[in-house]
Image 1 (cartoon, helix red, strand yellow):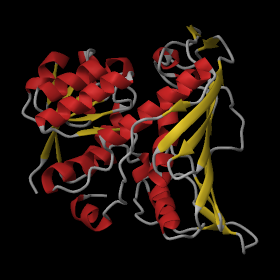
Image 2 (cartoon, one colour; image 1 turned 90 degrees about the horizontal axis):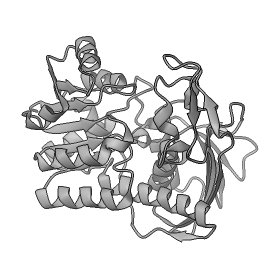
Image 3 (cartoon, helix red, strand yellow; image 1 turned 180 degrees about the vertical axis):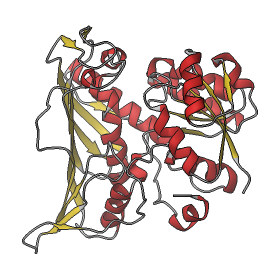
Image 4 (cartoon, helix red, strand yellow; image 1 turned 120 degrees about the vertical axis):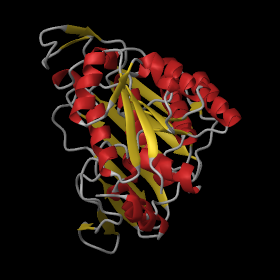
Length: 368
C-alpha cells in the first residue's frame, strides 16, 4: 500500500501523541508540521524527524492527502474550511467547529468536493468501548434501557500549559470532555433524540498552578459542572455529568443497564485504561471481560486518522466521521441551550451506525 501523506497544523499540547502514533502506523508519511509559532513547529518536527516546517498559510499548498488540524477550537472553522477548499481530506481535533451551522457548512463543502472529513475523539475505537459494543450487540445485558457517563476531575488549570482558552465560550467541560462521553454513548446506543441540561459556574475565577502561567487567574465564561439527561432514539434514557470541580470522586466512566445485566466501561477519555466489567442478573458479582481488538499501547490518539486513511485507500467504512462528530456537536449545543433556557431541546440530526474495527485489516497495516 502506498504511503498516505499527512501534514500537521497546530503543534501544541496534543500534537506529540498524534505524531508518535502516526509514526507507529505503517502507512503514513508525515510531510510537514505547521504552527503560528514556527519555533514550536520546528521543535516538534525535530523530535519526530519531520523534514519540513511551513507557515500556516503555506500548508494548504503541500502535496498531501490529509491535513490534520490540531489547533485550538476557536480556529477550527476557518482552518477546516480552507483545508477542504484546497482539495485535501480533513481530520480535525474536536470540535469540527464551535457552531452547529459552521459544522454543517464544512460537511456540505466536503460532500460537494468529494472529500472525507474525520473528527476526534477516536477513543471509542479503543479495546474497551469496542468490547462493550460487541457485548451489547451479542445480548449479554439484554435490551439496554439506561446509561450513565461521568467524567469529573479538578480542572485543566492544574496541568495544561495554556488553559485559558478552555474556559471560554463553547468550551468548558461540556464541550471539552463532553464529546468523549457522548461519542462513546452514541457509538454504543445510537442517536440522541432529546436532551435537558443543568449547569453552574462553581468558581468564577480559577488560579493556574501549571507552568508557564502559574499564578495567573482565569475568568470563567462557561459552566464548570454540567449534567445532562438524554433520550436516545431507541428509548434509552442516559445521563452525562462532566465537571472541572471534582478532584475526588469514585464515579468515572460509563455504566449501561440492560434488562438482563449491567456493563461497566472505563473512562471514554482514554483508549484502553481500566477494565470492562459485566454482571448479569443471575450472577452475584461483576466479572472482568477480556477485551477484543487489544493494542499494545494505552494511548492511540490518531487511530481515527488510520481509519480515515484506509477509507480513502480501500473504501472501508469511515468510523470517526464528520457526520458522527456533527451529531455529537448538535447534542452538546442542545444541552447548552437547555441549561440556559430551562427547557427540553430536540436533536434533529442522526448519527451513522458505526461498525466495529476490522482487526484483520488493521494487523496488516499496523506496526504496533
